[in-house]
Length: 177
Ligand code: HEC
Ligand code: HEC
Ligand code: HEC
Ligand code: HEC
Image 1 (tube, protein in one colour):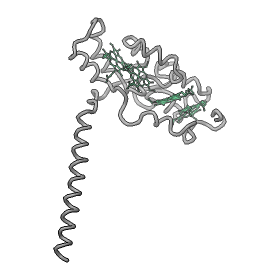
Image 2 (cartoon, protein in one colour; image 1 turned 135 degrees about the vertical axis):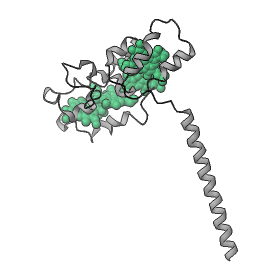
Image 3 (cartoon, helix red, strand yellow; image 1 turned 120 degrees about the vertical axis):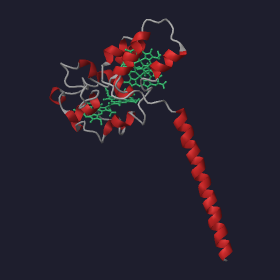
Image 4 (cartoon, protein in one colour; image 1 turned 120 degrees about the horizontal axis):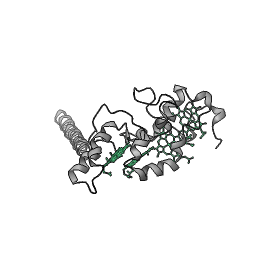
């Protein structure tokens, strides 16, 4: 009986270790595949500056509802921190949206909401701006200086539920589904 228990416990421990090892190596593999983090301490520069090098993406965004999400706010809410958290870029951060007069290029759901602030990305890419074709190394340097998309599910920070029933958007302003 005693022996049997030990064997079962032993097998269980071996099995558990197997799980730990498998999940451990899976974590290592996905970390290696993950995009390297861009340089820290970047500031918000606004959608217009991104347009200088990414005109196509800028035009797509211009036609998208995200570019107009600030305009959805009635006047009395346009300086309300509760709304600006989702209807502008980087509100509350030193280089983020302040008001429509001083930071018009950070109004709405701009590029940097999904890609993170891009001042260093701009700096790193400026020397490449006139090149017809980037070398692989230049392209890697450029790509590594900004997120393809911020990690985590950035979309649900604003789209919490369909028609954002849990957000601050006042009931009377919501579209009826
Ligand atoms: C001076 C030019 C320049 C500016 C300004 C610029 N970019 Fe880029 N960006 C590049 C280059 C070059 C690449 C790499 C090659 C490519 O994708 O065209 C790149 C790549 C990217 C990528 C792909 C990243 C990846 O992981 O592959 C994203 C996303 C991006 N830029 C977003 C932005 C955003 C957002 C802004 C504004 C905050 C911006 N860029 C401003 C030149 C620029
Ligand atoms: C609502 C979020 C969101 C906004 C706003 C946004 N993007 Fe993106 N962008 C994405 C996602 C997601 C991808 C990745 C697409 C993929 O995986 O193929 C992407 C990809 C890119 C890429 C990589 C090349 C490509 O076209 O796939 C560039 C460059 C880029 N965006 C620039 C911009 C610029 C410049 C703006 C603003 C004018 C902008 N994005 C606004 C989410 C966003
Ligand atoms: C900072 C907040 C924020 C983030 C992050 C965000 N969105 Fe949005 N999104 C909005 C707002 C606000 C609107 C409403 C614009 C409108 O109704 O005119 C919107 C509208 C949309 C629409 C249009 C809905 C329609 O009625 O046509 C789609 C699709 C969408 N978002 C997808 C995404 C995806 C996918 C992501 C992630 C890559 C994302 N959003 C990230 C705030 C955000
Ligand atoms: C957590 C993020 C978030 C906050 C905070 C937020 N909104 Fe929204 N808002 C959204 C998203 C996302 C949409 C797009 C529609 C959807 O997905 O529900 C939207 C849509 C809207 C619309 C268009 C009507 C509709 O239902 O599409 C108005 C008007 C609006 N918001 C006003 C406000 C006001 C005013 C505040 C502050 C009191 C606010 N919102 C706070 C995320 C937010």
